[in-house]
Length: 198
Image (tube, rainbow, N blue to C red; front, side):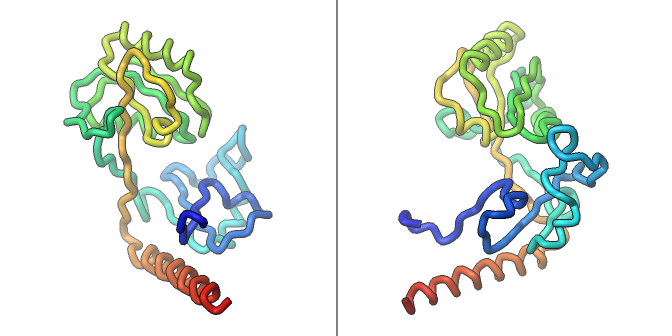
C-alpha cells in the first residue's frame, strides 16, 4: 500500500477463513470436478465444495478460460524462437504438472527427463544442478520450467533455464468477467472516496 498498490491479490487464500478480504474469486482447473472428494494431501480439496456458494465468482478452466502459452523466455528475459525439435529437461512445482508437460510437448519440445516438485516448492540448487547435469548427458540443450518456478531460482546451472510465459484467455462468459471487474473497480473507487473524506 505504501508503494501505491490499489489492489492486493492473494493466491490460494479462499480456504483461509480468518483473513479479511473484499472478494473471493475461485479458479477451478479443467480436471477439478471434485471426482476425488478428499482433502490434501490424499485428494485435491483445500476446502469444502459447498463453500463455493460463498465466492463472489467461480470460473472453470476449459469453460470460462484456458491457458495459452505466449512465449518461451530465456534467463535474460529475451523471447526465444520456440521449442520445436529441442531436447529439454522439464522441472516444476505445480499442483497439476501434467498440464505443464502437455503445454511443453505441444510447443514441439522433446522432454528427455522430468523432475516434479511439490506444489509451490522451491528447487534446491544442489538437486537442480544434478538434474541439469543429467539432462545435459541426455542431450538436452536447456531446462524448461514455469514462470512461477523461474522467479524462485537464484543460481545458474550447467544448462540454461528457460520458462514458458502463459496467460489466461477468457472464453464464453466474458460478461461474468466484466461484471466482476466492474465490481472490483467500484470497491476501489469507494475506498478512494472514503480515504479522501477522512
